[in-house]
Amino acid sequence: MLEVRDIRKAFDGFLAVGGVSLGVAPGQIAAIIGPNGAGKTTFFNLITGHLQPDAGAVLLEGRDITGVAPHDVCRLGMGRSFQRTNIFPRLTVFENVQAAYISHRGRGRDLFRRVDRLYAEETDAVLASLGLLDRRGEVSGFLSHGAQKQLELGIALASEPRLLLLDEPTAGMSATETRETIHLIERLARERGLTLLFTEHDMEVVFSIAQKITVLHQGRVIADGVPADVRADAEVRRVYLGERR
Image 1 (cartoon, one colour):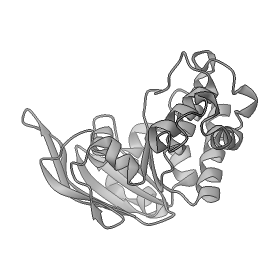
Image 2 (tube, one colour):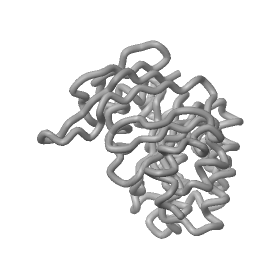
Image 3 (spheres, rainbow, N blue to C red):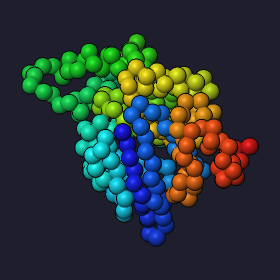
């Protein structure tokens, strides 16, 4: 599904991502972990076209998308959520997801249909899958942080991705919200046949749902494999997991 080959990015002489390679198989749930400053978000930005790499290649389903603009990457089947909640706070819950559908699909041939009716069924279906259907008319800026993160997930789903990148999906959530979000992500991946790649600081989250884990340190991969192997890796324990004791 996703293949990254020796991708590199430097800022003013500082090597943020130094020759990272990884692969994510179709239907897999994969995680990227590492201390603050390890290069995780920069790596996501390189994959999604928000940053241009200095070297290396990104392939989506065998197609080279290196340096392709973010909106084109999205249309090719890659969705993304961000660390900071990325919603329209003055729009309703329904309008946020509906706007994402309109942006992705356009208005089609039905130019005279009322805007509020466009993709209404699709939007409600996404909200139902998130448990937000009964809140469709609420202004999204007044939702709890956890509900806003779930709504952002719905916005990403409206782009109809086959590969979904989640940047710290449980950041800032309570323990209850975190558990609910983990179950939601697993269920959506299963029901929609999604491939997932996510970053996360909460190791309980990572080891509970990831089928494969890549560990970054100072912009480089120090471990890549199944959770049991990564957990047992001496370098990972020294550099990262040991910091959480």
